[in-house]
Length: 270
Ligand SMILES: [Zn+2]
Figure 1: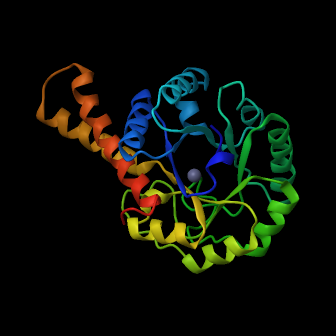
Figure 2: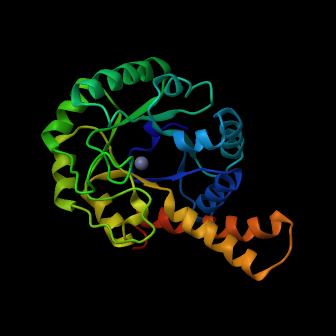
């Protein structure tokens, strides 16, 4: 399955850190009966000291899923890693050149996008840093619609991550999205739009963002809030040492969060 087959409706993408994340995300998507994107960030790859083992696990979990699964590499700053998308068994990559200046970002992103065309890989890119990553920009950063349109035309990317008010790694859901800006970018840019840092965005605002033209909704931190919260509760209440006893309810809580978010993104519940 590739992103190209899933552009008709908004879709949620969830970050995988451990095997239990991958299993829980697929279980949640099966509960909701909706397709899902499993994504692996360069940060998570660093945690695993390389992409191979966790990527192979994601491929296996995706292959046995009862719903459509797309495997995506997220926030890749290393062009060589981006170009490993195919041999890792993934079909989609976000190349993140947002810390480069406009000209440098266009140059490297175009290189990855051209490679993607030749290799059947969907390429997402970013213009205008989404708040909260690396601290290089203030959280008030916004994507300019005209600049976004030029960036897409100059690079040939398949989808574009935009800065419209969300911020990475928020554990409270207080981000305020600029819906009017989403509409303006959507009107100006001919490719699907991606919202990063959606964990900090309330359900109603996520639903409103999809109606305003947002396509892919990235959710990472919210799953960790569910997963780690359950883990902490179990460890606080129990003295056992078998990790399965703690990981099972944690994985189930994660799956429930996934099913909920998928329904919100699908417009069923807000
Ligand atoms: Zn992101």
